Length: 276
Ligand code: ZN
Image (cartoon, rainbow, N blue to C red; front, side):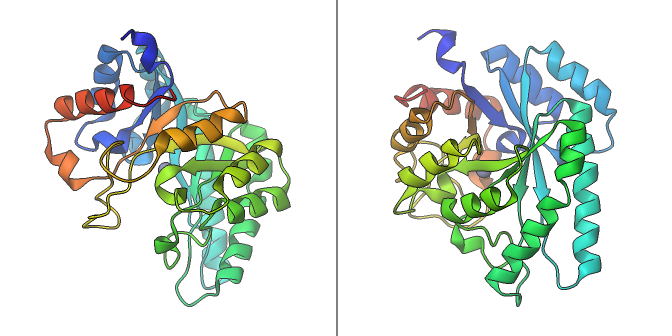
């Protein structure tokens, strides 16, 4: 194996949640990982231009800032507040040099799916001008339908494509995550459709465990579960996508491990993938 095997590997800071940003950077640099997606918690109260410099000094590129969104709400003032918050997130992204903000779009219990989706669309549209000005893109990440009550009313690639296409801005596209989408019957076609509309912005990998104990914090590492990651990666790459494959895992079990050993395990499982 050469270090080149890792040239498309990106890790989300949340995957190594016990580590600070600096611990992530020094360990990723040590093993030859060149991509990082930064969660907002690790840059809270930090000098963002210094963050940008430290990442670049480690020879690492920021793939995205995670996460914005949560555009829904029972009334207009709460939805307006979300838009203002997302403008700040776009500014944070620009300051650390992140080209993309990943959006978990939100869902308000008691509001219909269609109304939630309309509120999401309105929220994203209100950000396009700021996104253009800052040159930071917005990636709508469809979530698995089990989160449609409180986290995202965008629950499939089809739904994410519909919203991205209806907004019709080069700044707005889709973030694909195998955990959320593996089940979708026409996933291959929806991935093609996404790319044909220039909306395929980024790609997250992990696994779905059939004995999942917690719907938020028991994701599997590639190989732990039932997702054919290579198949989905092939569909993604067949569109011409050459971006990073981002390992994003929330797992109490893996967070309890020594994070250096967990990182070794991530790399060994990543190297077992065929499409990388
Ligand atoms: Zn994701």
